[in-house]
Length: 129
Image 1: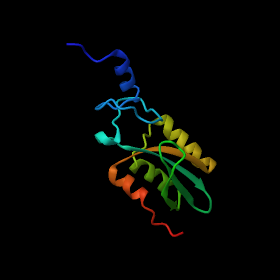
Image 2: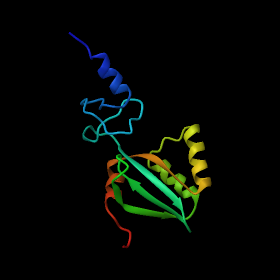
Image 3: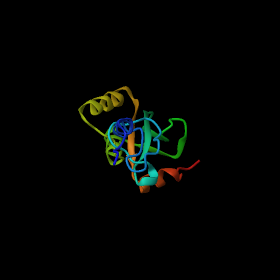
Image 4: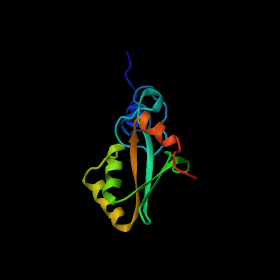
């Protein structure tokens, strides 16, 4: 008879709780309905990139403290953009301008929404020690 509480709706639409099971989601809270990983949602990962002799990319868990073992080295900035787009980075006009600015500075980062397979590949290290 009763519907969903208004506070629950606000939290769900703010991306703070799972749209399916109502479990709390770790930050950062992206607006809109989100799913937890148990309910089939994407894995949120932060990709940091830095220009050395090539573009060095490192990946961090959602807490921004836990590094994933795989590191990637890319030749040019276009490859960094392609990797971000394949990783599900939301590139609206504002975020694309921020991304271009970061590339111009030689360092920056972007949030990725990875599939289960993409996330599994990042969890395994294939780079030489």
